[in-house]
Image 1 (cartoon, helix red, strand yellow):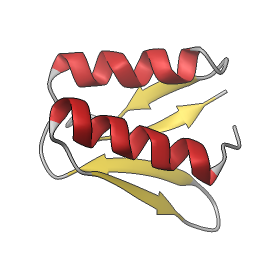
Image 2 (tube, rainbow, N blue to C red):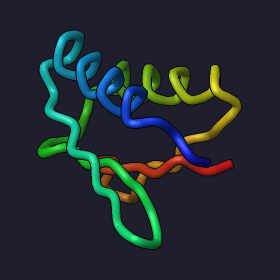
Image 3 (cartoon, rainbow, N blue to C red):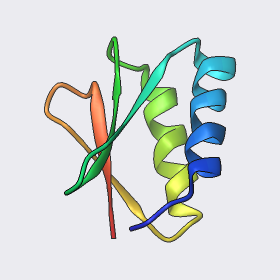
Image 4 (cartoon, helix red, strand yellow):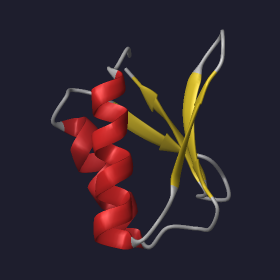
Length: 72
């Protein structure tokens, strides 16, 4: 799924304002993904899933729950 930089900025702001978490955005040639410095609370993870579900996408969290990517 391709998402806009405005969406990335909005999600980063929401994570900071609501959960006091810094969300890192990584954009490489082959993929885009997000990471946190610390494991987010379940409420933040649920917010992220809901944020992308509204756009018709799913979130796949990494094993340590400190990162995720968007899948179609």
